[in-house]
Amino acid sequence: MQYTLVLQWSADSLADYDALIAMEDALEGALPAAHGFVDGHDFGSGEMNIFVFTDDPLEAFRDAATYLGADPRWAEVRAAYRPTEGDGYVVVWPDTLQDFSVL
Image (cartoon, rainbow, N blue to C red; front, side, top):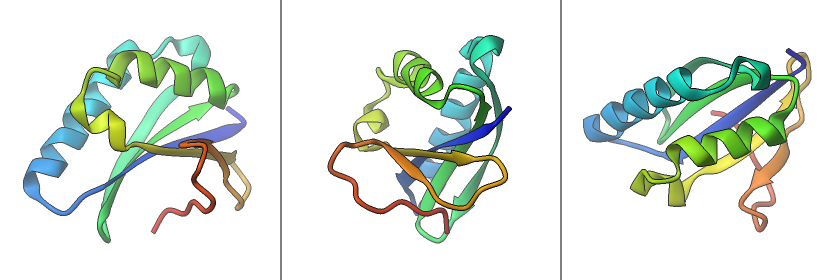
């Protein structure tokens, strides 16, 4: 897998953590192997992230939108990808997002 796609939300409560685990489990069970695999999550510093290793980050993002789009938290998602061995992120969503980082 050449890229790491990061799905990110603001977070600061146990309810946020529970939602993260539920979304990660849902995506892990639904993401086609041809589009990547869920490689875990992190939670802290006011944010929560799901990491997806993929050869096609845009297709993996479309899959995530399909499988997680009904979740009310999806409206707040920020997404970006980078080469697995790289540093700089390319923003996927939202279009107006200028900077992306994982704390």
